[in-house]
Image (tube, rainbow, N blue to C red; front, side, top):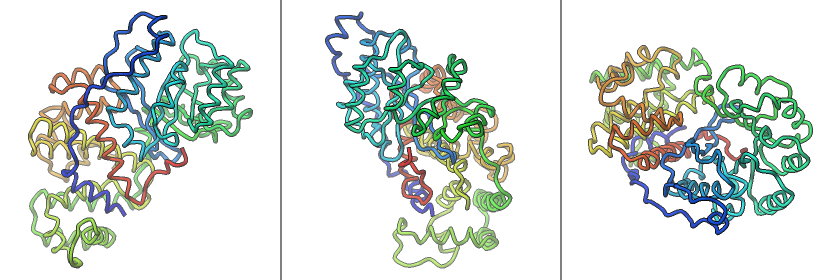
Length: 466
């Protein structure tokens, strides 16, 4: 298990470094857009596009939601929003969203005015769900229902937030044509419409629900334990990142052994001491020899001893392998795997920023900074205590424990990208002299790279169920 993950981790230097995205011209707006609305002062691309993870019931990441938080879409006419959506689609293509859709599903916000444009996007229909946004004052019509029927017949999938659409006959007709209904806990009108939201599961039992913006334990409990809770298939929100499962004593003991071996490697301890630690854990020893002898390493003969394995891998490669092993356990829980994916994204994103600066050693240390930034969450202990056995370089520990030093800005930028904090992204990118478009490109590359590293493992999320 995980031999492909480890191979991807150790050989990540062979990955092609993403270049800054080329500026694509958005499609020319339709004639009605220019004749019925004032010209729009839109950029050629939208800079950073938020892609927030969506988890299934087992807490495994199975999809991403794409949106832009810049106020452009809030008060536009249908024609203006259609133009905005076209720029969004152009930006998504610059981000190479097609690679991500090989491994994850995508929920993309679009307006009703953009329905005509969807077939020309050529996004994989089985991997894309369009979230239909209703503009203020906009009304559903029978013609739109008919248009939606045609698109669904072509294989396209859709989701809406019922709190925006209400309970008119046309809205009820719309709901039965959808794949997902959305309950947004952050929307101001959601709680006022709870009676409607309670009626819809009985009326449309075949529909699955996406719970968005879960920010408290109470909201998560409502989705999991309230009446009709089985309707919730997908979950999104800031609380999910902290609602991780406790590490069992068995897993903790194994991870403690891994940390001790990593400490010995950092201290340049004799091979005999490292070998002795492996011999105390037969499962860990088995994993090491299986990985060393896996096809990814291309050996001509089978390695039988730990000493030979250390000579083959080298101490730096073994340290990286063990750092990833920290995030794996026999249970392969969804919470642990989500932490692994998030750590891989941070690590690769920060490493690529280091490569942009042109310092290979700095990039290597940035990778470890991102990889270990969630170690405290994994081990359910303060980060300082989790890092203590590793004796990491000062620049890494200074960023992780004190928010100081050369590596703190890349770490903060990675966190800002996760949280869709556009103000912090803009400020941090400027302070690092990195273009916003390049931040977008590098972060998406990191997301896709993490999926590629995980894709050949034996613990893949069941994205086909989305």
